Structures are given as structure tokens and as C-alpha cells.
Length: 158
Image 1 (cartoon, one colour):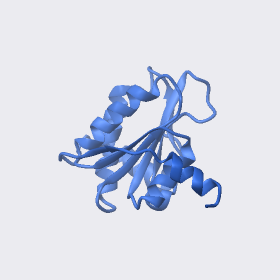
Image 2 (spheres, rainbow, N blue to C red; image 1 turned 60 degrees about the vertical axis):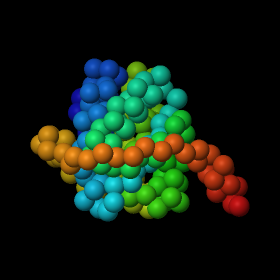
Image 3 (cartoon, helix red, strand yellow; image 1 turned 90 degrees about the horizontal axis):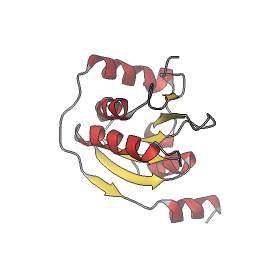
Image 4 (cartoon, one colour; image 1 turned 45 degrees about the horizontal axis):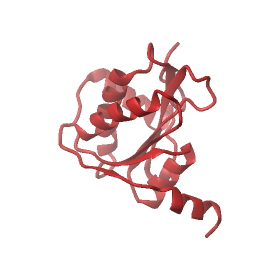
């Protein structure tokens, strides 16, 4: 089964989606996102048991490209979209396999203004960068942020 799909990157953990892929994907996404502005990226994920280790590997890859990473921790997918838009970031990555069974995990890339990327609007380019193995190099900075209060206020219309 191909893991690069129209709106996400997902597959069985750990045979198709694992920490090695997550780190390489971080490098590819960090390289891709730097084409669109200063590489400032939010990362958040769901409650799957594999999410914390995939997140760590993804962040390691992002940081190695010089990207600034805002780690949101465990949050719902829309909270990452909200964080990218409200914090003025250039992109984000959600670690989740959405509705798929617990054996799966994956990644949902997010572009500027909190818009989900599709195959045509970025995923294909990210895959090309990953396949090339040619990544931007740098030393990024990591911050953690609790977006929950601002996201809850947004949902409440405040």
C-alpha cells in the first residue's frame, strides 16, 4: 500500500510508518517549507501510542534543517491548523492516522494560514524532496506551547 496519499502520509506502524521515516519526512518538510518563507512550523499529534516517538523523530528532522519548531504536544488535528494560522507560522504537521485503526499512524502536512496540503498543493513536492535525499541544513530552535486555552476560546467564539 502506498503511504503517500492525496491528503496525508499514512500506513501501518512500524512496518510502513516509523521513526526513520518520520525523521526523513521532517528533513523533507523542513526543506519544502523553507521554500515558502522563514521555516517556522507547529507539530502536534493524537493519542496513538506511537505518536510521541514519531513526533520526536519528526522534530529532530525538522530542527536539522534549521526550522523553528513549536511543539504543541497532544492536540486534536484542528488545533494544529488553528496554531499555524493564529501564530503566523509558515506550516505545521499533524501526527495522526485519523479514523484508521490503532495499528496505523501518519502525518498531515499543513501549509500557511493553516490550510491542509494535498498531493497537488505540496505532498508531491515533499515526496520528491524526500526521495532526492537532498535536504536543507541548519540548526533550528524548539519551543513548546500550550495552544489549548487559545483554541478553546476560539471554539467558544471569544
